[in-house]
Length: 132
Image (cartoon, rainbow, N blue to C red; front, top):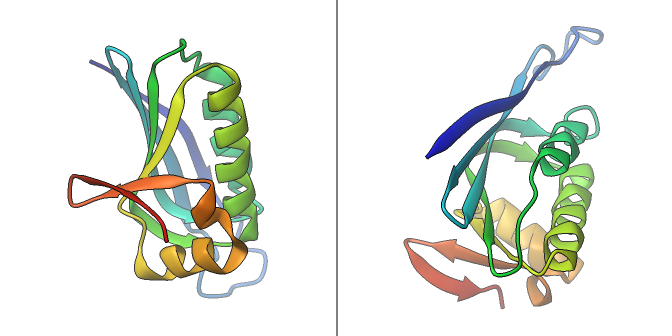
């Protein structure tokens, strides 16, 4: 198993708001043909490029599985959803499969509201589930 902290991003305290200075990490691990990107913290327009950077480092082979682990994702906005779409496009273009794991109730609602529930699949409680 290979583990690599791909991106740590500390948001500047430019507005002094409640999320100022928040930390976001992408932790990449690979075990055979399964590649996991654990997203930790707040995923928004300032931190979404870290997901893209992690995807740039990942080279899945046909038949591989790429997992976006969301159990430690505290916040996600439309930029985060765009990062999920980019991940889906890159991974499926390589002939691999993409799955999200443990999306929060709010994120699940966002996926349904935006129609991404018909495109992205996820695992919750170790059972494969397609969002519906």
